[in-house]
Length: 525
Picture 1 (spheres, rainbow, N blue to C red):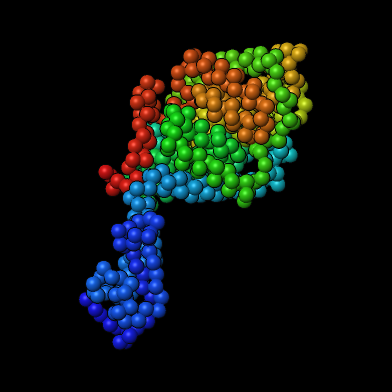
Picture 2 (picture 1 turned 90 degrees about the vertical axis):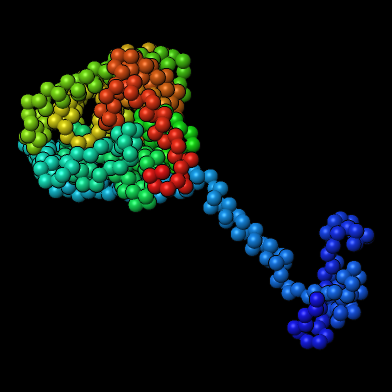
């Protein structure tokens, strides 16, 4: 077959490609030979004798040309990426997005809190603000803040159809990962008023809840399946934790140990990415450095482990009593005072009066812990702060003021560790004030959360003081073991929506077990 398109005698470049039988001198099969400036059929037939004079002229961009083959290869690769890509890769990218957005959400809450505080002080933190206020203002601001927060929640309960939605822990562990917008915004605003006025409750709990809410909205906008929706909310919680405490590894363990109830290695990668991006965003845009400044902890010796073990046992005994006090006071108080604004207002009055005695009663405990780490404290002052803050946290929790108890627990643990260092320290042990303050923080946290790994890593990340892990880890393990033996339910049992600890076990194992396998499954499949 012959087709001439470029004139009677075109000048061509002929490439001969055949098998080894056609080219006996070839060193390997499919070797090619190229002949430039070939004219007419005769020249081509001389090059290709086996063609028998039947010469086919093909364009340079034929189906077998290198550029065509390259395009086909790229198309094949794209197809394989669409159909055969590891399903965790999109989740990792989504985790990074959730981490960034969650960090911005946490900073937004913090900025709004500073805006409210600017109405009555120029200080950035609550304890210095309380210390510089007249006593009557120090006693008046907490009840006003609690009353405002209670009014917001009471009004919302009357006017919206769904006044209360699940918390993020419950939504991830036993729910569908969906957080309703309006109820959670109401809780966020109520908590914002309360914590800005010095109420002794943790603002970080609300920050994490707000970050989880934003993450839930992202998952719903992407029409995520139930498994992925849970994982997205878990990523938001980890990123919010990391942004609030500057602790990405602890934030990941917080999700793994407490919310999921165990490590799901494939899915936890997305959670880790979200936590790291959340912390990186915070460090790059908003706040640089560790959460707490502390003196460097010297290397740990075996003698130090004896005191660490003592702290762990004491925390294991104190933790269940603290949780029992919170539960008993909540049941008794809420049964007697039903109207929410009044209930929260009375708790604000109690906190305000306690703060007249010591300004350290105000706030979540951040300034108290920072002072315990670097300032000299006498035993009587530490004991007074411990007792007053214990009463204040109990009052706030009993009233149902929205917030968390994680940071207040850290402050109580810091006071406990400092008191132990004053009373029971072995003479040969390290006399580092920062060491025993941090070990006390981690131990009491482990006793109440039953999450020893998260607690030990957290006190390291908050100060970037690695040596403390050597003493904190055994103390946290002891505290968790003793605390869980004395009380099976952790501080987060109610937030997780669990009636019985045993009922949680099968659920925890399947929360995100099929997330990676269902990334391409249609919604609801």
